[in-house]
Length: 169
Length: 253
Image 1: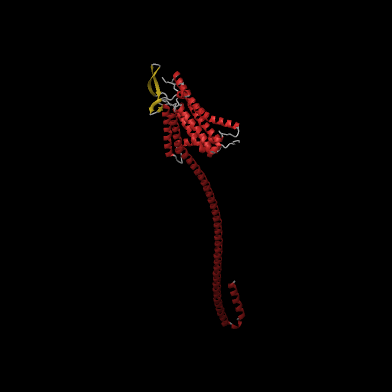
Image 2: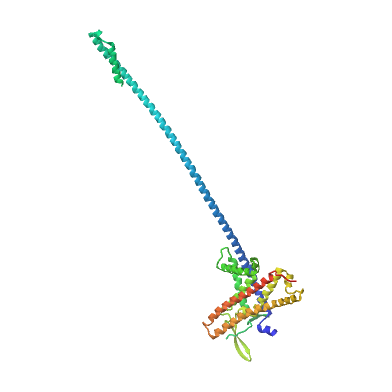
């Protein structure tokens, strides 16, 4: 047996030394490689999980914001339409009022002008009538100087009346 | 001319300790991993660099494979360090043994044999896995861990009950066989690895001797593959044994 062991080169001291070598390597690798590496992988996994979740949340927030924006725009649209139509209505009302007032004023002015014209006409008429009367009177006087009995007052009045009628028409 | 030796050659004596070339390379492998670890510890970040990505890929794939055997990620993470360390250590040891210079660079010693003086090359480096001291040490640690982790998982009494059962003579006998098989595991673990790697080295020496330059190339590829496969087998068997020993299977009474 010892011959076999000797032939195979088995030496318990070397065997122990090799075993210790392995154990050193086991401890070093476990402490400095396996554990930190696994920890790091686990941490990274957690972080990726967190990142993915955060990303989903962010997308949700963006979607919500988009929806809100669309809603706000829609609300603003209806509001603006309402404002515009209100303003149009007001403007129309105002325009009508202004037109009405202008109409009234114009009518007033027209009436005044007509009154003025009428008065002037009347004055003219009176003047003409007075003149006519004077003329007729003079004519009558002239006629009377000739033959007063022959003058018919009624005839004169008729003549003047037809004259006034003629001017007034 | 290279001498094929089953024993790892002694480089010098350190007191009563024979400092062999395979032990030297084993130390170098540990040094490489240790410095890588120290370096990696400083650069581990949320956004991984190239080395960190590589390690993470390895970790993730190994854990996936372990999940298939153990059935849960928690268990995989608990037993990951021992299985992964065995795999990494054995694989790098195997591959280091294939590097140019390993097994060929060394000092010539004069030895006296049968009254004649012979010049023998003592290589400076030798793959740790082609030295039985390394493989046996690893096998003992693996089998010991399997039993220790089993005892921790199912309880000392239940675990011991697998080997020592006196309720029924048949189970007593089965238990004894189980006990023997634990020691057989050590032998099979260590000699499988040693045999494969040592045979590979011998094969490369012989092929290199027969036809240097291009002929050894396919064999080198083969040995690279064998180095990986043997490391994988060692780690995988450890994993399966751990899986068997930590599972709560029914112990008949």
